[in-house]
Image (cartoon, rainbow, N blue to C red):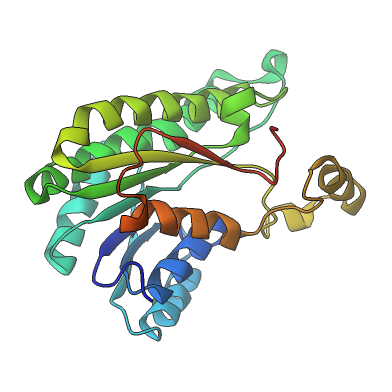
Length: 248
């Protein structure tokens, strides 16, 4: 059974890692996928072909969600190309880790801009369409760090915690029009980025997790699938930790 048959989804930052995993699972479940990427044209073209091979419409857009005008432009283009916007996944994000005493103002501002301001930009950009349709699902990718904090990640934690407050406010504002807003807080997810870390460090993290493994992009994508589909029709304003029990 295809849970997203005929739905149109926008996924930001989808050329690799978690975003790519979400795009693949959505397409397998019948969703048409519009995705954004920042620089990797080759990876975007590759993903476009891969998704189209699954029999859905798919298109990559070079767009910076942290730029208000670009977000507006993107929503306009996707609406023209796809006809409706049923699901928005705000996944684009960056880290610039450092202890506060060494963190520059620029590194703080940049992380807030890319991780948090982009969620405001994109939600505002699709809001009008979803209000007209009287339905929509918005899924914001936070982090366990946004729930519990982490030394050396004050900027990242602030951006991810801000996302939770923003999402709960949107759930209250948009709920009467059947637009749902939920948050996923991934734990330690193994992607190409974590592949560059020291194996002993990674082992230590795995051991500290009750399920004794890191998560996969698919673990996050499956939770996204649930929140994007009608299976979660009565769920809004929630934060789902997908962390193998890390915060238990």
